[in-house]
Length: 380
Ligand SMILES: [Zn+2]
Image 1: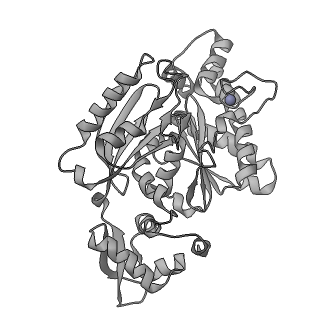
Image 2: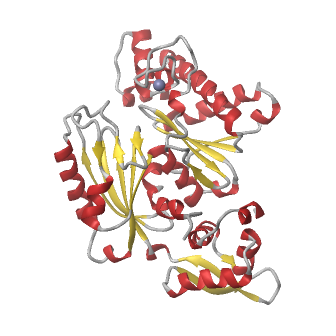
Image 3: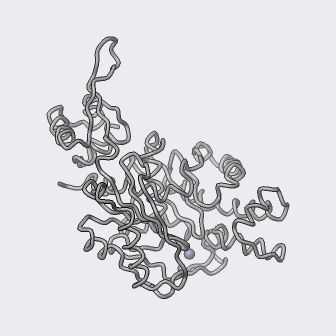
């Protein structure tokens, strides 16, 4: 872990370590970061004084000796988390341990306009932000299906919502609540949920793959979220698996999303059987082992495995978490992909493939980690 000492560390990095690894001693923080005893003490004291970090004497390694151990007070800093997909907008208050203290949601339709979307959003945020919780909010985080302009603060989801091709979402929230507002895609936010609130911290490098209507991935390198130069990293759904394949809305041909995204899978099933199903009805058919449904899922998994191979070859992760709307068949999907990876050269076969701990909730819960993550390694 000493690799971290070469990076610019700040007080948020210390808070991140205590959040994820606590209870942890000051000595352990020194060993992990390479920072001096004095620097660690000063950074920690600031949080202890503010009631964000709790320091308690606990049994350490040496018998009979108690050590001051540090952990976070989960409800001391809260995030107003917002999640947006094709069907719903959801808002809630999330603490430093990923617990949802309160939440509410509104349905969305393809008829949304900028004006009404914003009206609904602000009403929703107001409804979860009580007088009691408001003073402890340290930021607002929006997790949305892509594409989005992370740094420009806009949703670019006009493909599904034709009446709002560019939805400037960050600025109105900043203006109304006077808090820092951060925007990221649901795959990145899901990756943070595993890193901060599950067991993701045991891996130095891992990827979170989310399979829904689109396919995305959140890439964690050196236990930090990798955003890329323009915030478009991890667009796994647009990795080309067939150069002469189906056209994609991104302008390319043969993108993974056109074979393994939910609409593509349902279209393939309809072509095979003549039946147009909802995803829930398709799930039911897979669960009761209907041959045509199983065949369709296996075709999808073969394409997904091809996409994952490209990702593994590029990033070389220790683990891939799988989440999204495929929870109903995850055992089958993981077993099939694993067997395909094991046919490849040794390091690829060693990549762990595990189900997301939070599945569909990860893209909402992970908003509770993004304020801290965005501030780590930033010069103070
Ligand atoms: Zn594409």
